[in-house]
Length: 58
Image 1 (cartoon, rainbow, N blue to C red):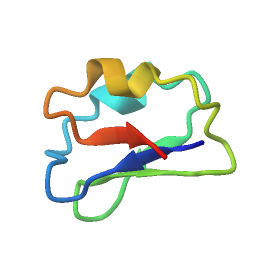
Image 2 (spheres, helix red, strand yellow):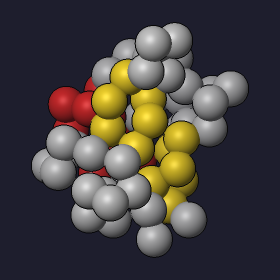
Image 3 (cartoon, rainbow, N blue to C red):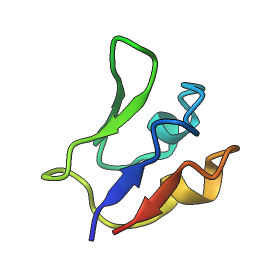
Image 4 (cartoon, rainbow, N blue to C red):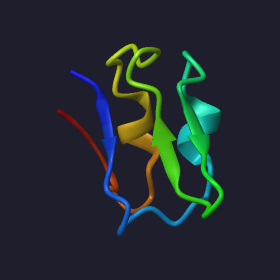
């Protein structure tokens, strides 16, 4: 399983980046969060802090 960002719901606030213990999330050039699946620990910390519920585990 890995965190998946729903692009249409992400507002680029960066809260998930601050919370991710693996530093697996970055903002792309359009201020949308993207997840490095190889680095994601499947911990769900990002899901708990996302204000728009744009993150799910798949």
